[in-house]
Amino acid sequence: MPLTPDLRDASHKLIQATGLEGYAELELRRDAEGRLVLMEVNPRLSAAVEVAVRAGVDFPLLLQKWANGEPSLRTRSYRTGVSVRWLGGDLAWLTAVGRPGRPESLAPRHALIAFARDFGRRTSYDYLDISDPAPALAALLGSAQDHVRNLRAGTGWPMSRRTVKTSSPQQERQIA
Image 1 (cartoon, rainbow, N blue to C red):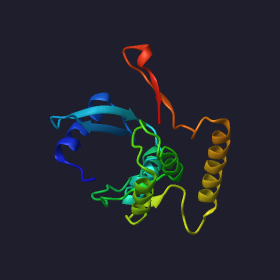
Image 2: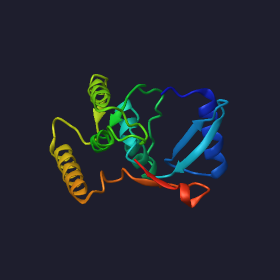
Image 3: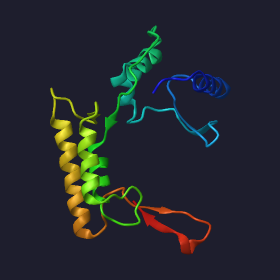
Image 4: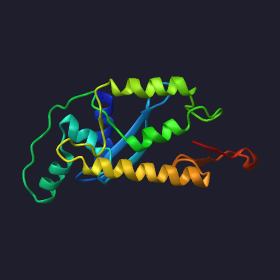
């Protein structure tokens, strides 16, 4: 996404105020009035760094240069609209298809259409590199094995259930 001046300024102020050096991932959202709200500061490389690298900002290389005291190139631009998908997460979403009352649950036909339509968008998948398909195949095989094991155990997809905390324990429920 494009970096807006208010997002850039708020990020710089936060980093300066905390004294962080090196890499930090800031997650900010906008509230109903459009104000920025800090959600998380993560001073380590996360899986989301792959999106930045594919967009043209090689954070691992920049961090290596910084750690070694080498001069690093300033990145002045990057491609917007770049997305990276997680096949295991996509498959988990599909397992919620047709389950009434679950968030994002669609009728099977609509879910499959949405899933297929997403493949038409310019995107890429985690781990997938045509020159080395082994990591993607291993991840896909592992996800499929977890899925089959959990279906047999009646627990659904791994990481697809969590408890929603409410003010009343009687209202807590499992959601996908």
